[in-house]
Image 1: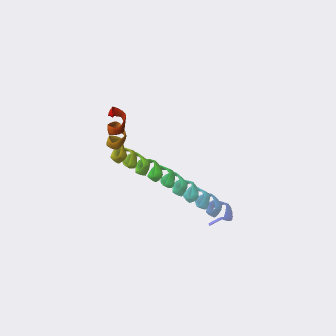
Image 2: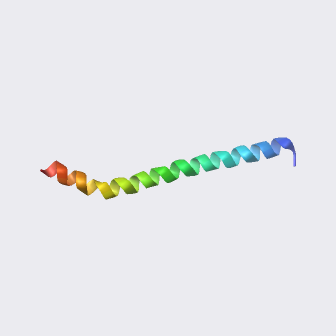
Image 3: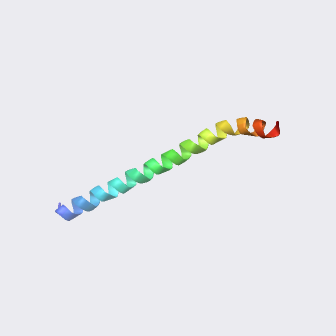
Length: 46
């Protein structure tokens, strides 16, 4: 393999890993907000 192709392959994997981390954090935040949402609704009704 050429050095440039190894470089591009590494950059591609790095970008894919970054994308996976961002998506994982987004879904984790949504799950947390769904679990905490009823607490905030009860506070707003009082």
